[in-house]
Image 1: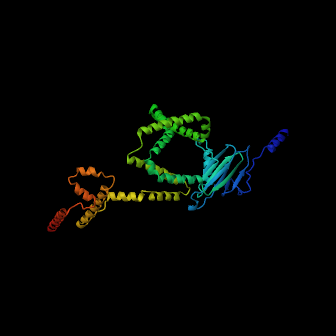
Image 2 (image 1 turned 120 degrees about the vertical axis):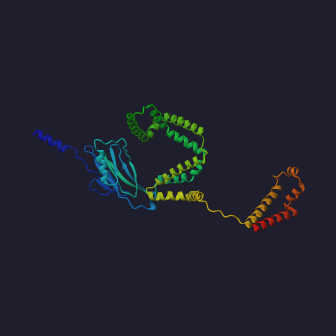
Image 3 (image 1 turned 90 degrees about the vertical axis):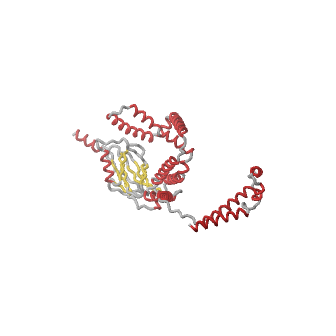
Length: 398
């Protein structure tokens, strides 16, 4: 009897698992799937002695609209500890599938990421699964105008429009070279390591595994960037100084691109980068793609003008030749304009008239022309008219 009493006391005195308690402004949920609308939240109580419970929160989405071009919906998880796991998917079934895969014995979770703010598309159904014993609050927040997306859109359009100027700018060349050298300095170490490691089939597997480990280390560095900057501030500063100086010297040795084709390549890369920024600045991808297409068309020189020039270069139009009468009219007009400009120059302060007079055979005629007299005398005009008449008669006879 004593054993039965102790067993009964143990069973009755054991703490029971508690079900989630919902906030007053949250929708009621009868199962482990909760459909949230913007502005609602749900509170989940702690379950310290029971097993981790998976709760799935879904957003149904809405119809895409241009008015909501820069709109963002965000899941906000308020939890004090890191004792939780996240699972994403389009539907609750997909979230459950990811959950079951994570529970597998052969699952690898090196690249799992825990985020307390999860932005999602307002125009698609999205679900987030949370597994935790700790108490937390899950809310769905609505941002009609995402400031970050607006800045990204503005930066993309600005980069696209000034890409031609930046491709020819020396300051941008050195700045981009230094930044690229600082970010890509690890590639030199990888290249040197590849030269040392013998090229055998077994080593390729080691390199592949090393790349995976390298990505994991890079992810950890990005996640703990603030801690690294505070703890190893001096090493970070020296790394930036040394790699930046080496990158600047390399850029100075090579020099800015002078070849027009090289400048075009830089411009195209900048335009592609700007187009990518514009495309990923909105969840409304169709509208973003249309905006990129319009920007390409109206970009000076526009894409249409480029195709026109290419077509004319490949299929040049037939040139219309001037008639003999049009040729003489254009000759007389251009000759009169050129003589008028010459007379203005001779009377301007920039003309050294005395130096010209000493080099001429007939200074008096030069002085008369500078004062407005015709450049030909009557005898020369008669000879020219006679030559024109003879050429016309010869042309008619032929």
